[in-house]
Length: 205
Length: 205
Image 1: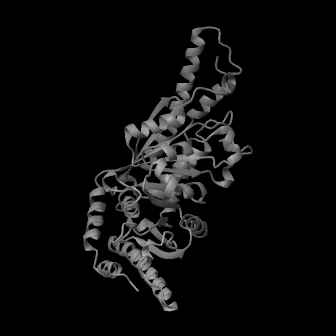
Image 2 (image 1 turned 90 degrees about the vertical axis):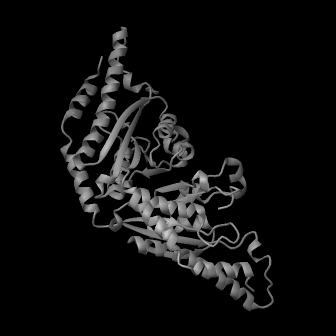
Image 3 (image 1 turned 135 degrees about the vertical axis):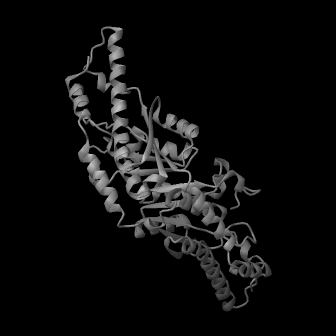
């Protein structure tokens, strides 16, 4: 009942695929020259008064170290991007008074410092572990800037921390990771927070 | 203009984060014990007469070797799953005649052989390179079985080859990767075919 074409196919499948294997081995060998460039989008925690990186992006960073880089620190380079979003709900500046142009300068200066501290945290960690890295800040809409930067920088893949919100919560807060999975030029992997790291309000991060 | 809380925040941010760093270093050290388990869904080429794995899943396999495992072959384990889908369009059996129950047995036997050959290809490659692996076959709807198996096996992440179809093409063929990105329990990364590997009809693979 086997069609002749299929029979031939099964026979040819049995030949040793040494050519392909050879190619993969060569490829693996040649890969050792150039580091795998992993881009990680990092952001601040939305929990007021919380001084550090968000739960999700710290989780994604630790996931990269533990699951991808492991002991092979020389073969990877991490590219941290932090997109500063204009304070949409205005909560951060609710208690501030703006009486002169200088007040706005101070606010911008403060934002800059916060962004730099965030990157400093990740760069310090990489330095301690011995992983090469680069970090930079951009301003604008996070999801769009991340995709634009991925296009410009061309990492091997992009890692995003995600809050793992349900469909109902997503309607209100939107998700950067869903947008980037769809629109980024490079492969994207989205790492959800661990269940034990979810704050009282899952929208917080 | 800076609120007291914020001032305190900036000050505390300046303290050395040795505790966190220590945790990351310890984590990286402890990770070396247990291999990172990467699940890869593999399928046959849809191009008639083509004897091997699909362009997309070979691309995804090579991507894992080149970009993730690199020279660190001991720290990873690959889990290959092949889901055999009932021949929906019936093209494969268009020229076959079924005259007795044995004919169906032969067809099933043929499918089994094809599935085993597919897995043999990947297991051989891993064996040559020195990466630990496991491979198995399941039957059913690819996207659902992949998600079920990911839930059962709990890999660290799931890699899927994708044809990178446009929205118009997707309407007709559906995409396993989109479904799994949304529904799988573990992180998922979808690797598109290279532009130079796209066959005449992009729906082919």
